[in-house]
Structure formats: structure tokens, C-alpha cells
Image (cartoon, rainbow over all chains, first blue to last red; front, side):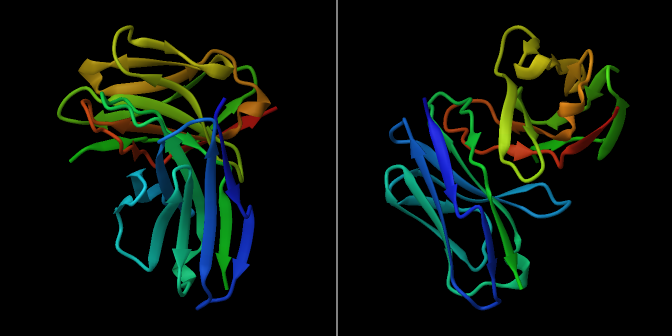
Length: 115
Length: 115
């Protein structure tokens, strides 16, 4: 069966520091991968999605970036964190069904607090 | 524009009572529809999904949802709520057809259960 991991689970960082959040998926190949941010009272915001290595789309312009160094690894980064980057970051994967109706499965999330 | 709306921000029910969480969608054609549940500090867990066919969909944990095209709704129901059902519930949709990778989420309904 497929599993998705995220780490760290919790992170407290000062403003201006760099960020690296990691997500890995096991038990599947060529998944679509997604990064979401969930801020209090604001629902889920899609940040990036990737349908393959070197194929990453950004949904919201900001100081975050994403990379996919391996097929089942997705990394969210920032060079300098802002206070507004605080939130709960969720990674998700889907099988990438060409016919549509792709179901997304979520990881446990990373709670990021920027002070 | 495509959208998913959850009209109720917070609902409180007594344990053992029935539950209905509302979800309305706005798409040009019938979308794929999903319900997810999120416990505090956790990722999202898929409860059920609707792609086509039978309009009454059964999910995990005793939940079901009914797709009603005439009302553009996909309401989640449970006949008898347990205290462990207290969580936040998200309805989501994606457009029909190939290449439909992106989910649009409602803002969520927080469910509280009174013992």
C-alpha cells in the first residue's frame, strides 16, 4: 500500500531564516505531488503541484519554491521566511490518472511557526 | 468560476444524533466530488468520493453522501454521530475530464459533538 511521509512534524523558525520541508511517497511510482498551506480560518491553498520530475507548477506567487529531486520526493523551500509563512503545510499525492477523477491522499502535515 | 461552498462554519450535535453537512458546488459540468475529514493537527483523510453513477455514495466510518444535480449539492450524512467524529470536514471538487488534477476545497465545517 501507499504511504506518504512529511518531516519535520513541527518547526519553529525565525523571520529571515531558510526553510526546507520534505515529503516522500512510498508504494507508487510517477505520482502527482502537491503542496498545500492551511492558515487558520482560510481553508487549504494549493501552493505547487508536480506531474513529474522537473515539471512543477506554482499556483501562488510568493517567496516559496518547490523542487522534485526524485520521482517520489517533493521539497518545499524558502530562502527567507516571512511571518506570513506560518501555517500548516500539507503534502499530497495522487496517481495522476489521465482520464480525470484523480484522488489526492494527504500526509500528516508540518506545523510551521515563524517568529 | 469553479467553486465549492460549505455554508456552515461550525455545527454542534449531540452524540447519537444524526448529522448532515452541506456542500454546494459551481462548475460548468458535473465535477468529481470528495469529502475529507481532518482531526486537529492531522492531515486530511478521504471519507468518500463521487465520480458518476449511483448518486448515494458510501464511505468510511459510517458516512454517506448524496449527489443532487438539481441542487448542485453533495451533502455528507451520518445517522448517528460518535464523539470521535468531532473534527473538521472539507468538501472538494475537481472539473470533469482528462488532466483534472487540481482540487478546489470548501472552507470547511467544524463539527463539535456534545456527550
